[in-house]
Length: 129
Image 1: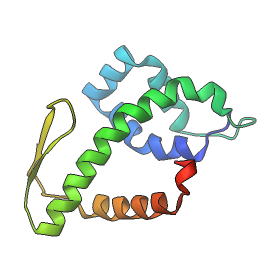
Image 2 (image 1 turned 90 degrees about the vertical axis):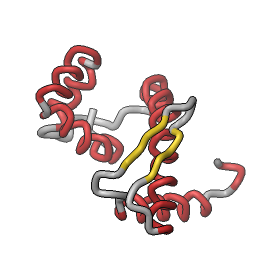
Image 3 (image 1 turned 90 degrees about the horizontal axis):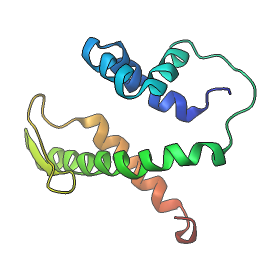
Image 4 (image 1 turned 45 degrees about the horizontal axis):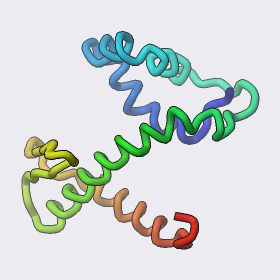
């Protein structure tokens, strides 16, 4: 299937992990299909139709349900730290899993992207959320 915008959205970070010696080895051992996907996305080519949601949902919904929550909790704490001028912050990512960040401090890009996500989410009719 041809890569979709979502593939390109995920590929940047995962290709960085894939290229790292340790992270790449862990990916090959524990997520071999993700590693194969990374190899395809290193040089993506249009190959037929896009995947249907019905074939993607069983694997993407668990990822979205777990990892997106973690990212949004972190991103919210990051934005609040920037707004209040903090150089570091601690956030509960859920189930008592604490994350602290001080190296480099909060990240401005993520605060900007969270603001845009919130704006777009607010524009979605309540019945469609």
